[in-house]
Length: 364
Image (cartoon, rainbow, N blue to C red; front, side, top):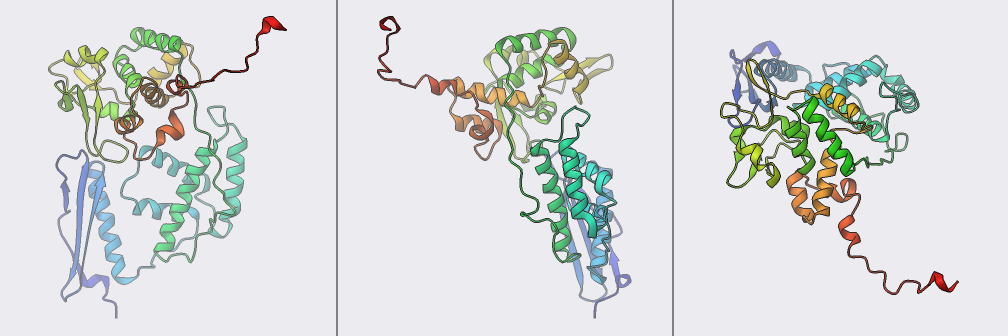
C-alpha cells in the first residue's frame, strides 16, 4: 500500500546552494522522509537568480511529494498543459527556448489534445505563408526548432505515463530542408559599418571589431570580464557556464586589438563596456543601437550572429586550420564546413587547370 503524502515530512529550510565558480548556477536538494524507512531525495542543478532557484526548489518539493501518492496525478486536457509540464521538467531554458515556448503557449496553448494535430498543421501552414513582423514568413529552420519543442513536450508526457503515445510522428511532420544563411560583408561594408559605429555607438565599436576577427556568440562577448584577460598569452577565457554548451573556451586576441585590451580602465570590470556618469556598465541588450548603425551604414539583411560566420570563414581563408577555428568557436561538430565556410577562397589557389582548351581567339 502506498504511504499517504501527509505521513511524509519535508526539510523545513530551502536547500539551495551556490555552485562556486559558476555564475547563477545553484544546487537544489530536496529530501522527503517518513517515520518509517521510506524516503526520497532529489538533487538538480538550476541556472538563474537565487529567487528563481528557491521557487524551483518549492516546485521540486511538491513534485516529489505528489510522487509518493500518485505519479499520474496530473490531467492533461489542452496542449498548454503539456507545454507547462515540459517547462517544469526542464531545468534550464535559454532565452530563445523561452521565446519559442511563449509563442507556442500563446498560439496553441488552448488547443484540445484530441484536435491538436490538425491545429498544429494549420498553424505551421499559416506561419509559413504569412509574413511576420519582419516582413518574412517563418523559415524552415524556425519551423524545425518549433517542432523540436512540440515533440520534446509530448515525450515528457509519455515518459511520465500521462499519455500513451505522442501524436507527432515523422511521416506526418517531416523535418524541413534548411538552407543556412550565406550573408557576408564586403571589405567596403566592413569599413562603412566600423566608421558608423565610431560616430554613432563608440561603446559598441571594440566589441564589433573583435567579433569581425574572432568567432563569438553575443552572450560570450557581453559576459567577458577583465579578470579573464591573459595579456601574456594574448587570450581571453570564456568561463564554464557562459557558453552554449556550458564548457569554457579560450579566445585569441588579434594583434591589431592588443592595444585596446592593454589600456582597459583599471576600475572597469568588463572587457566591453559603456561609460555613464555613475560608472562602467555591461553592454547588455544593444539591439536598438546595432540596428540604427546598420541602417545608417546602408547594410540590410544582416544580423550580429552573421559576424560569427564571417570571422570563422576569414580565419580559414587566411590559413588557420579548420580544427583550430572549431576550437576557438566552441564547435563540437564540423559546423564550419556545413554552415560557415562558404567562400573557400584559400582552396581556389590550389586549383590547377592544366593545359586548358588550347583555344586561341586570334585564330578564329
